[in-house]
Image 1 (cartoon, rainbow, N blue to C red):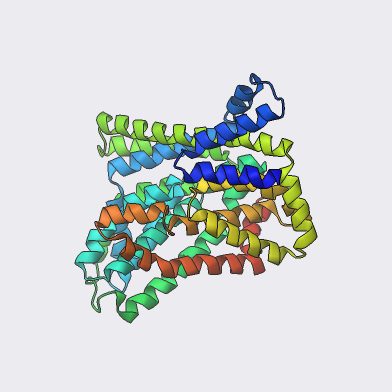
Image 2: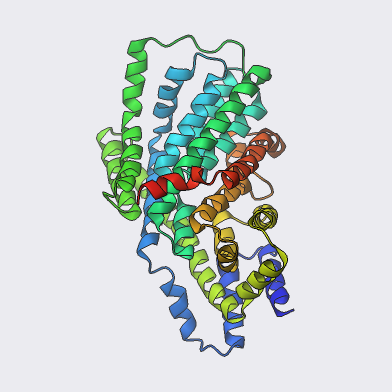
Length: 425
């Protein structure tokens, strides 16, 4: 009964509109005080959780995303990919998904990818005669790759909470990321031939023009490859990768005169605001996490699961249903920080690899990004396209089923997730 009341109080506060970070801090503080924990110990827990070298990568990735957004480099990348595939039916849809995948390897943020590629692709695809729902759904879903393909802010948060290697988590995201790009491409091509795209696309681009636009996009590709290959080769840590990626980005945008110092100031301000919000959630979740440990909630849930859920498959089905429901109302980072500490003991019960579970969890967060009422990608694309939310939702629905299908695939073929991190050891 005590556990039920605590969980009920948590969701009551969340649904009342109180910010997640404040809700977690407030409820955690009250619970700790009821257990007789001195008030002076709570600030130590609050601040100790964000004094973490791994989390240093979060503001750096956010700043890199904001710089790229302000510099407007998305058009170069989109034009380059389009020059290679734009002459086939559905070519712009293909270019959109590939561009999202490349930018995902730099930004670490789905919302940033949606904003960057959306501002370029939506008007271009609409002008060419693509079905509007198909356009918006493709962008909303393609942008979710931003939190799966490394670097990824949710994977950084997951590794900090689960105490797993961030580098291993990043490497584990490569295989499923490529798989999802392939699945999205297959669907977009089929949809294009079913009327989603015009029959005739752009005329074939000559070699000289293709080379020129590809050179303009090359710096972005080099930055992405440097970050991923550097982590895989063990040259630098994910946090160092973030710093190197930002340094390369700054050199590129200023040497190419794509950004003013005023734009940089705005980018820093935006990244700082988002970082502060994330760190408040992380710190509050740590206070709440300590409290629920004292009340033995994770262990009670783990014992219930062990006694009532016999197989790993059934456990994943139950967790999937829970995350589907929570994803309708909670932001992805909050899902990790609230749910993961409760589920971690159960992973050992069912012999589930925490690295595999992290990728599964992030795919479920991807799904939450394109499901209402708080699916952030839906709102970003709605704003960019100036469309009705209903149309964006209908366009993204087939991709939601693809994401669920991917969960099934990686369950039966876990090496899609685990092969690269195991090979990198």
